[in-house]
Length: 252
Image 1 (cartoon, rainbow, N blue to C red):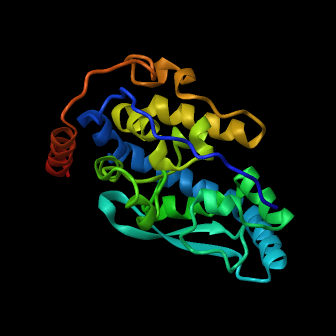
Image 2 (cartoon, rainbow, N blue to C red):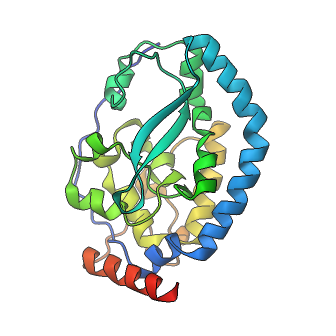
Image 3 (cartoon, rainbow, N blue to C red):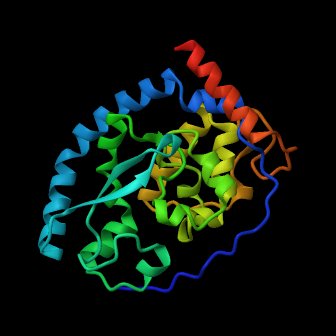
């Protein structure tokens, strides 16, 4: 099963840069407590589903059904990222989405990828603290090196997420580095409302809800700030992030 995925060209966007409050929230104890609680519950509830799907992948690909790959976590620390197998074992380990689109897979693999059920084992990563439920998608080191270093550095200021604004957007068909505006939106406006909205949209997409372009993201999820697509003056990203880390360190 293969399909053509058109490449999305990077475009210039006037998005807010990460602010201290949003970084502190994303790395804070309240969010971590929610992640840990929800991650444990989801891991238990989905365990039978993951076991059933793993058997399907093992039968379909005649291989170990858990796929493990190195991804970049908070502060650039690599970790083992897990998914259910959806591709043949001869697929290059660091193939990007466009290369994968030209790879023939089984109907089972296509089903798992289309439904995103192959992502369920990532709940385990939330429990261990390697990931958060909501945040920037963790990227492969080799793929991260192909895109803007400043942007890739910004997104490593927080834990990567199982889902996030990029994952519920129309940019999902492309690569993360081609649409930096979605991760920058999260880094600038991370908060309970944005997390709740992203989780609801993610759940809706599992039952057929369509991804949204940036201009259709509701402004109310951005901590009462301007609408998501609005132009917001730039701020000093490095200074804001360093300040947030200093304050987080002094509070712990």
